[in-house]
Image 1 (cartoon, helix red, strand yellow):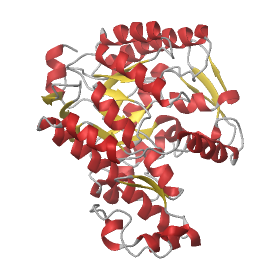
Image 2 (cartoon, rainbow, N blue to C red; image 1 turned 120 degrees about the horizontal axis):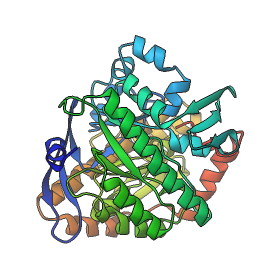
Image 3 (cartoon, rainbow, N blue to C red; image 1 turned 60 degrees about the vertical axis):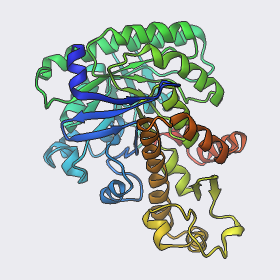
Image 4 (cartoon, rainbow, N blue to C red; image 1 turned 120 degrees about the vertical axis):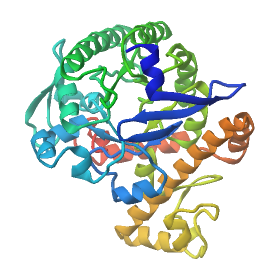
Length: 408
């Protein structure tokens, strides 16, 4: 793919003069996506607890689904018989599918990584499966994905340097195989074809990260993803690496930061030059009673909301805030009513999409730095130590190492 090809499917409309933030449009075969964009996660062909129409009503233009989960259940045969993933899940808009590399990483002792690919046992029934660079592409083509991610080798924070180097180099070799297979299966000159991105790795070694960016940037990929961040490292570490590596990726291609989605991280990552995001965070914390407000995240189960007969966020235009009070949401969560999860999820997704709208508009109007500083002055991020405790508690309620992260 040439630079002219890249320009055909990604248009940059405006750049911030003080940071690397930019706003633009991804021109996919199933519609345009305004960037910077956040993708709600529909791992198993569903964004948990909400319908596709409700996801769309929050302002979401693209969602993410996961190859690992879909190959296990319901399986490629069922999805194809249904007419493809978009028809199966009643979402006619763009879909990006992750290769499942992170989910396989989360399986820990249930998988074996070789040069051929990854052999693993299903977290559902223990059955043996294999993902290779070629089969990951084949599955996503079979799903009808609009943006395809190659299989990568993911390592966690604190891994030895030799393992980080091994993973980065294997990811590169797998990417070459994935691109070769993609070219044999897809007419790359066809305007309505799916896109295939490349994933950079390198763990937490800057030299490895730089070399990975150079390698991926030199290949005929339609976009560049930054993988292997937000895998247990402190946030300042993640942001420091991001600020170093994002500018190394091609200016004329979309940049995708995988697995990051807290409001404060979105603003800072956009400032570093990122265009595309996904994360389970907004929907996961919603189901545990964590709702975003302009001042920060609140715990709706707290007793202070028992008689709060006003919306959780009076500035929000979502279904939840325009029709229900915080006291009602508090009651639903205390009573463990299923409606609680739906209403909280709708609100958090709309909050995130409103932030993305504000980011895009501020870049277009030359006010990004002003808006960023106003956001940072107003929004109080969740306490990271408390968040780590909550994550460990959730993971501890599951069986098997790493499985606490795999179901979404």
